[in-house]
Length: 99
Image 1 (cartoon, rainbow, N blue to C red):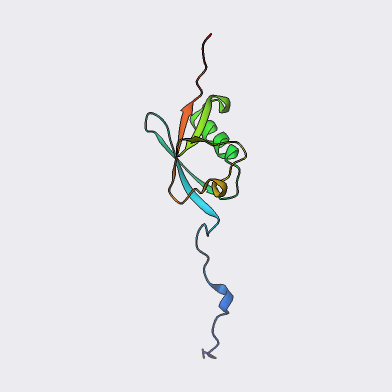
Image 2: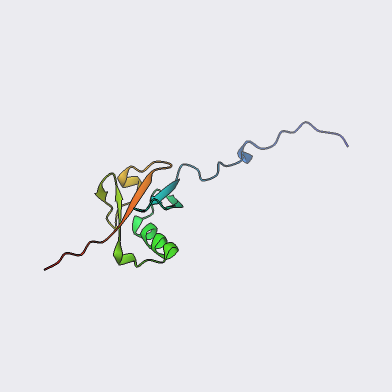
């Protein structure tokens, strides 16, 4: 078979896994258990909170996510908080006050 010398098209570069739009995030509990997630930078973190609660069998209303000592609000995204690849989010239980 002869080779006619044609080069493959320039647009057939392999795409990097994940690209620039996804992050690998770790959620760490108070007893140092770690759960890893891959999320898009633009995904609302309430979805991450829900996925974490499902995975560990907890009530979504009983947990709070914290990043750099600040509580993560439901409308926050990884992009709005400045999360980077490999960052850790802390999870704490809701504290209910007394009388």
